[in-house]
Image (tube, rainbow, N blue to C red; front, top):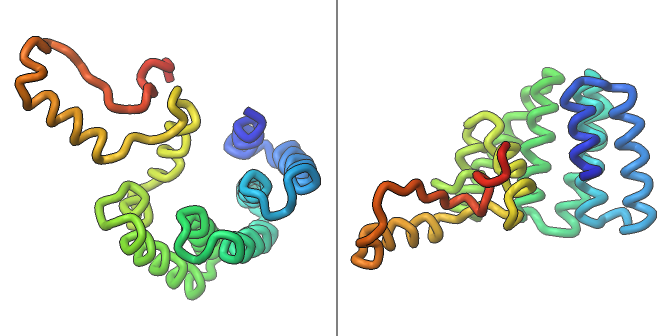
Length: 186
């Protein structure tokens, strides 16, 4: 909930309060959880986003570079969170006109996501340029009652059920395979 409050400030381009909020959250998370904890790094992503929304791109780049380095050290180069950091840094490099640095970041993200997650995985598709898909997937997993996204096997299992005799009495139904997201009223 606290992370969403900061994201709302940043998304609303309320830059002064957003930056102050994220600095406070980052300080608290680093003190309580440690500087390399996943939630601390998420707070650092939030701070970088606030800097980016305030058009403080050099500050955003510095924060993203530090976050990427810490995620590489803690999680390795192929972890999805590390790849997300690469994508964030590439986006800010591009916004700052540093296209020579942005392109290799994007190429790395696409190649690594294909290798780690597969060519048809939603995160890979997002890396190829399907706008804001990563943000949408994160929002769904945050809001769904099961707090995760559905995977391909679950969709396939539902399709298999519907194609089998087990579903012979199922008629006129809409079946959501979305970890409960549809019941939340968003």
